Image 1: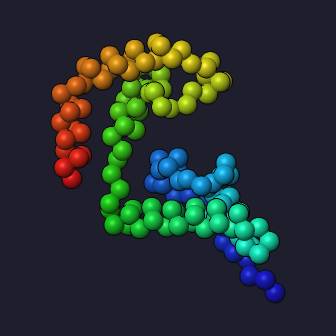
Image 2: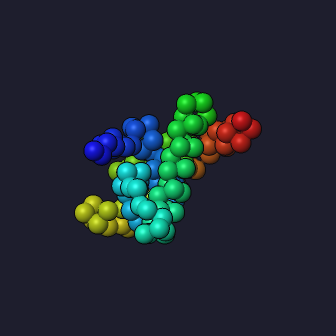
Image 3: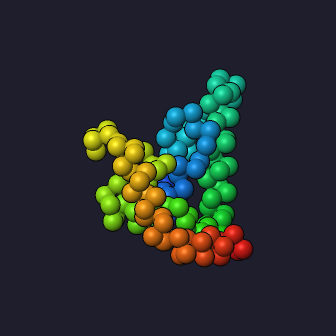
Length: 130
C-alpha cells in the first residue's frame, strides 16, 4: 500500500519572494515542490526540482530566523502603484490592463522618485549598513 504524500502549498509570507526562485524552467514553484521526478527517468526535471526545493528550504530557514527584510523596491513599487495606478519599471504590465505606455510610466516613476530623493537615500544607506 502506498502512502499518500501531503502536497506542498506556498505560504503567504513566501509569495513576494516567489519571483526570485530560479531554475523552474517556466514551471510553477508549487508544481516543482510537489514533483518527484525519478533522476533515472528524467534527470533534467529531477535536477530542476532539487534546485527549487533547496531555494524554498533556504527561504524557510531565513524566514524562521527572521532574516528576511521587506524589499525596498517592492515597498516603493507598491506605493507608486497606489498613487499612480501604474506599475513601477521592472514590473510586468498585463495585456488585459491595456499594455504599457513606457515613456509615460518612466516619467511618472522618475518624478515619484525625485520627490522622495532624501527619503530614498536615507533608506538605502540604512539598508546597506545592516
